[in-house]
Every structure is written in C-alpha cells, then in structure tokens.
Image 1: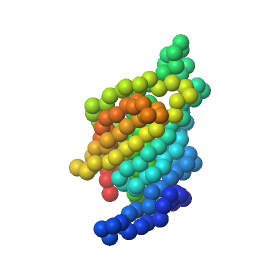
Image 2: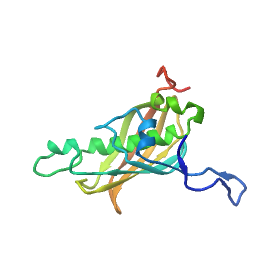
Image 3: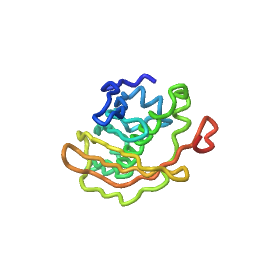
Length: 177
C-alpha cells in the first residue's frame, strides 16, 4: 500500500500502541475506490486511522458537471453529492484497513450505502468552497456499519448525520469476508 504515514507507531501512556495515521492522494484513492469521473468526488484523505476514522477534502470547482443544471442561476452543490463525498471518505477509511496483500481487490470490496439517517444540511456549498469531511466508523453488526459523518466549509458546518454502509467482499462481491 503506497499510503504515506503521517506519524510513526508510538506507545501511549498506558502502553498501548497507536496506529500510524495515513494520507492518500487522488491517484491512490482512485485505486481504492471503484468510482471514476464524474462520480469520484474525494480529492484527498488524511489522518486516516485504518478501519476507524479519517478526514478528507473535496475541492468544489465551477467546472463540476452538476453545476450546469443545479441551479443555472445560482450554482449549489447538490446535497446528495455532499453525502456521496462523505461516503467515499468512509470507503477509504474501510479500504485502508484491508490487508496490504489484498490491495488489488480493494475497489472490488467497496460496498454500498445502506441508509442515510438524520442528515442535516446547514450551509450551501458553492464553487470555490473546500469541503472538509470527517468519518468515524461505529461498531458493525450483520455486515452493516454505522458511520458518523460531517462536512464543513472552514469552520461552518455544511452537513452532518449517520450513514450505514456495507462491504461487498472479495472479487466476487459476495459480502464481508
């Protein structure tokens, strides 16, 4: 895995080992996810604790194809694409935890969005904004994992809620393995 560790594994005060945090650029994200342009929305992931949490960036530009119709007189990023950006960060956090020897199959294992719960949108996202994303995975049950997600522009919250995600499994896409 060609992720860049942002810190070395270190022992904490109670003796447990802290996992190094990882960063992923656009090329590595493209290898981890099955999405392609125009649906690949995540530009960068950072401070990723594999399988637990992470942060990401979505740079919003006026050349995004959805701005042509949403809305022509006032460009606004659709809320569903803000949610999709947070879901893609979630997939990177999950994929970063899968075995290094399985890195060729990471995109095949990325699952599906099962539910969107209590999502609140509190700010319009427009061209020139940089969405800062965060995802924190909860305890999975029955192949589904709840994820607390947030998106903000600067210090202003743009969206927050819970996603429920699944994993497809190995190359055959037959569920968690």
